[in-house]
Image 1 (cartoon, helix red, strand yellow):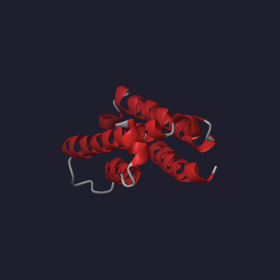
Image 2 (tube, helix red, strand yellow):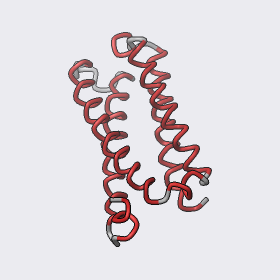
Image 3 (cartoon, helix red, strand yellow):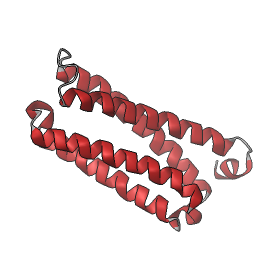
Image 4 (tube, helix red, strand yellow):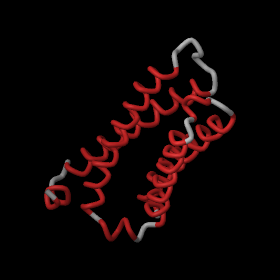
Amino acid sequence: MLSLITTHPIAYPALEVLHIVGIGLLLGNLVLFELRVWGLGAQLPVQPLARLALGLALAGFSIAAASGLLMFAGQPMDLLNNRAFVVKMGLVMVAGTNAAWFHARGSLLLMDRTAKLQTLLSIGIWLAVIICGRFIAYL
């Protein structure tokens, strides 16, 4: 499989497309859910919306992670020596920690100021992940 990624002319671009689709699912559904935390769409019940949006966000993350791991396998040393990639991976870990904190403290039920701050942090981190991802090719 690894040799296919590095030698087939469309393998890497196909993985990039999957990666972007995963990012779209992840970020789009997080934004939808986080807008609800901020009070937009108040007529939508939080629990069912969270199950749908966060489930799709997790599916998007899974697609992005799987395609990202395969792209990494094609050029691990180049990526490990790339500052943008290293920062991106650190930010993904921070995003996961923030999500774990959000759910562990029951922010979904509280919908308080801290929950709102956690959602702002989430969007900021994920936007920084995307920015770092774009800079990988240039650093």
